[in-house]
Image (cartoon, rainbow, N blue to C red; front, top):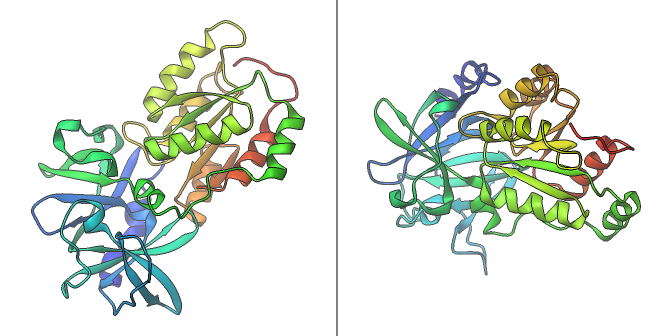
Length: 310
C-alpha cells in the first residue's frame, strides 16, 4: 500500500513554493475528512503488531517496529475525539517525520493525495467544534477537510523541548538584542507560543502573525512606521493557510522596502526538497522545528550589529 500512496508524492510536491498544499486525506470512522501535509508522511501501511508502553499518555497506543526502528504510535482518533483505534484490525498506520523525529499515527481509513490552493485554507470557526487540534479547513470536491495541527498533538505529549539551555540564555544576554523586534509567523497556536516564549528568554520583543498574508500586510505597515517600531528578522512557518512561508519569502524579496529583512523558515517539514525550496525563494536560513538553541543561535548570527528599522 505504501508504494501506491507515495509514488505520487513527488509529483504532488512539485507544487510547493507556489502557495499550493499537497495533502494526504484520511477518515477516523465517519464521513469527516482530515488532512495532513504529505511532506510529513513517510509511509502508510496496515496497523502492525504493537507493544504496550507503561505509564504512557492515553494518546499513545503503544510502540511498533518500523524498518528496524522502535517508534511510538499515537492514536490520532483519540486525539481528535473519536473512539480508540488501538484494537481495530482494519486501522492503518501513517508513519510521519516531524521535526526530525519519526512516529506513527493510527487512522481509520486513508483516502487519497490531493492538492489545494493555499488561499482556500482558512482558520476553522469555533462553531465547527474541531477545537485546537485542527488549524485549518478547506473543501476538496465539495467536501469539508480539516487539517490536523500535528504540532498541537505532539506538544500535548511533551516530546519537544521549549526552553533555551542555560548557556544559550547567557550568550543571548551578552548580545543584548534590545530594541530589536522579530516577527513570528505560524498558524499553530502552540508553535506561536513556543516561539514567543523563546524570544522572551532572549529579551526580544515579538510581532505575531497567523499566516503569510497577515504577516505581509503587517510588514508593509511596519515599513512605514516610526523608527523602533519595525522588525529586523522574520521567523516563519512554511505550511500555512492563505499564504505559505515560501510565498511570503518571495513577496518579501520582491518589495524594495522589505528586501533587507532576514528570513528564517522554521518548519517541521524537512528533507532535501524543502532545503532546495528554501534556497530558491532566497530565505536566509532553514531551521527544523523545534530546536530552541539552534534557532536562537541562528537568530544571533543573522541579527545586524546596529539596529535599523525595515
